[in-house]
Length: 272
Image (cartoon, rainbow, N blue to C red):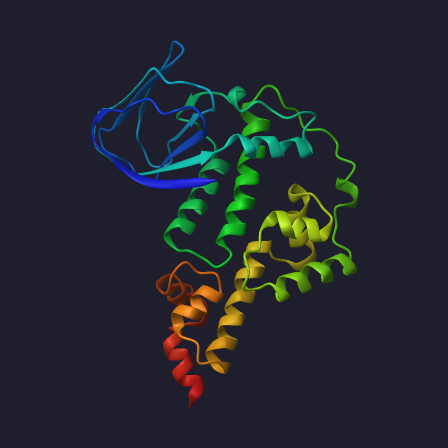
């Protein structure tokens, strides 16, 4: 999944290449702003209010897009075909991304909440953010296919009844996390360690530990940061890198939210 937060001027927008599914979400109301778009004879004219949603599936080539007034804080979420291929785990067949409906002004609170969580990760990066986005993309794809596509129907999955983490498998996963806390931990790798599909792993992990994978890993990485601040002379930038933050600034913000002070202040207090 990729996501961008954009501001748009009033203009005629060039039609995008239809090689990704796009979910567009208005974070704020743009007074007087409207989006007019058409595809295959379907014309849509939508007022831009906080919470407005648009869907443009893969393969749907839009004939025209017109923005009547400047728009601010528009979140664009892009999903590739590979996301839909992964849905075959819980569907009777691999769905066609082109069969998701081309819609405007969608009233769907679940999609809104998923978009808000994606935006929050863009604004306030966490050390478990990559894993979180993987989980959110799985949830978003499953919802789009089951609610807005005609060619995929959920099927009973024999793994569902056994998709729990027993003590041995849970310990194996936790040991792997702790041994690789400074490495790039993906949902795919963790589900392989647990011998579960990606679709079932996140739920099983939450049921077993009380926390989703990204939150558990984020907490352990901050614990690791605390240990490094106390027991090493590594620079704050190096500690941020070891704890999988993209920069010292994002590490400092996350650490302050969790601990109540900056990493530098924590190190000074620990030394005394």
